[in-house]
Image (cartoon, rainbow, N blue to C red; front, side):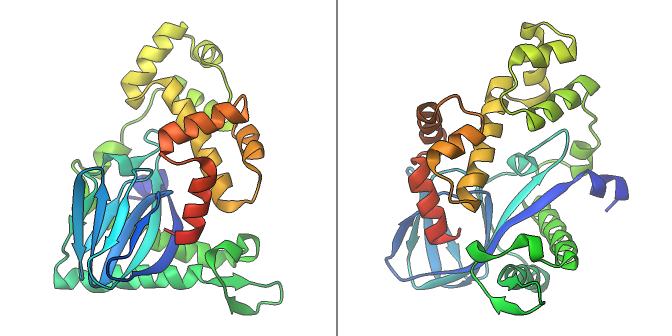
Amino acid sequence: MNPVLNSALDIHILWAIYNHRKVGEVGIWPAAGYSLWWMLEGEVQIWSGEKCWTVEQGQLFLWPKNLPRRIVGVTNVRWMSIGLSAGSVYQPDLMSLLELPGVHTPQSCEHFPIVRWMENLIELDDYEFKPEGVREFSGRWEKSSKLRPAHFDVIEDSMARAIFGWCWGMWGTVDLRTVLNQQPPLWLQKAVDLIGEEPTVPIAKLAKLSNFSPAQFRRLFHQHMKQSPQQYLLNNRLDIAQRLLLTTNLPIDEVAVRSGFPTPTNFMKLWKRERGLSALQYRLALKASHQ
């Protein structure tokens, strides 16, 4: 990839695990990120409302984040699952530009690299590193990222970019260079940066920073980002809350405060409206399923 394009990408692996379900077993779990599956064995159905997708052995499946789903084992099934997050300064959620949910049957020549990358990511994610350098098998929730060797981050980053590239090739609708070469106006860069630093920043302050009236700022922000600044601010706070729910045991009230919501009640109401489950149900479901 062109070095300039490569440096514009911000890609992360959120999880990397093996999953299995018995025939007839049903589960309802949210997805904290874009969930990429490689089916190792069997057949599974994924339902969202009245729509259903069937995924069989040898197929790839990519599911969008936060879309409610019900997973049903048609047979005994095993699959690998990794969570992907990809963005750039101008487009914080590149994965949202893909046509999803998506099922793909790779050609035989594609199997080896995809399977090996996913297997290696799972292996990297399955170890906890101690100060004395001793490796022990560990679940994702006990892994200490502070003690993780830096070269593992480099390896993971490389494979994450490779997998993202394959996903874009399978489900992308535009040339990635077209997306990444778009340069946002300076005022928009400053506004997005400030939102990242100050999740509770009011629209009036963002408009003043951008030298627009609040009405102009809302209109131009929506024109560039394809969503209102209010929705962008809410999504940013919900993403902060999601990371806290996923990686800490903080009480829900504390998660609300740290995420920039005015009250825990406001947070819980908005969270359930946007995510479909209560914050506590969401945390328990994610930690139970590791999906």
